[in-house]
Image 1 (tube, rainbow, N blue to C red):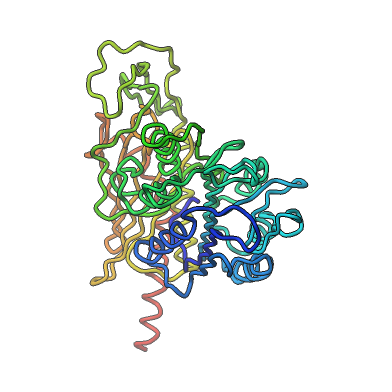
Image 2: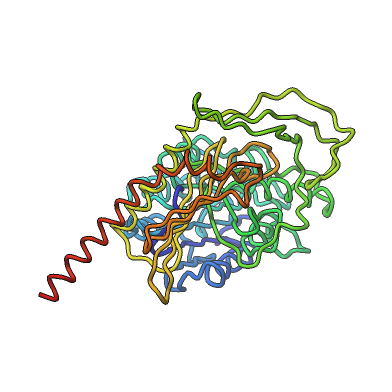
Length: 453
């Protein structure tokens, strides 16, 4: 998703730990669902009445077929929808299916539900374009007497890919990759993947936090894809593999949650390569930002690393992006803010973001609760070095609406850049939003004059 605003959050949480008919128990599924519900209430501040929690006997085929689709049909454009499932499932007849409390082992195909039919298709047809889907289940066989949360057959990842690509604001997180198992842990009292998912979402995993503040789609998946297999290998007797998998909409990364007081200190992220910019060149005449890089292959150390001596050099291409492309993306995010202001009521701070594999632009719309004065802050980061997941800071800017004053500064830049040069290159990006606020002032002034008359 490109922007961080939404109206209300609605959630459906489903966990089937015990089945009505002779189907293997999914250990700790109820614990997982309740922990996820607590995160929604305590951290995301979702009202309890906005959360549907269906455990065991409540999670029937008819409930998923009828009630879930009804909940989705009531969503609006500004709503965010979150779905969590823990239980068994399988792939059959071209569709991914999940089991319900009343699934029968003698008639698996007819007593399970299609994820596409009950969830993905209704969301595609709804007005909602902001959704997160978490599924703690796996891709093996339900009748194997193992310790995993078994799927009857391999899940089809293409179905998930097609779903998230139908919108710019969708993501699905699965506990394992195709053909693998998703394991529970008696020591943790949870599914291993869900345990670390909740830990990250609670802000208790610095490795999952970007800029000491945000849990993003990318940071969450990077954290889960590393911590889960590492934990299984180092802390359990399980010999199977479990590599979490995610499919995210075309915007590449977005903010899931802002963590209060989070810190990235103590991060234990492992990275394969280090790219160190030799210098950054802004070539305005040729419409280019260029960084010559030195590439080093990691020798097994964990990030952050401060001693690069002895690392093997690798061939890399120089970083290069067009100034006009960056300026165009800045204008687009400022247009999103204008569209938002014309359509929604809001309070305090709203976050917007645009990102691809070259850049990250974050903008903040803020209104002082005492003075009611509005400021728009925007920062540009370019993904040059490979050391910072959200990119290397180029400049920050702030527009003071009340005083019609724009400041662009490079104090926090990761590079030695001339503030005046940056101001000259990027200040015109703000022209439209400045005109918008000036027009709003004129309209307000005319209305006040009419009232006085």
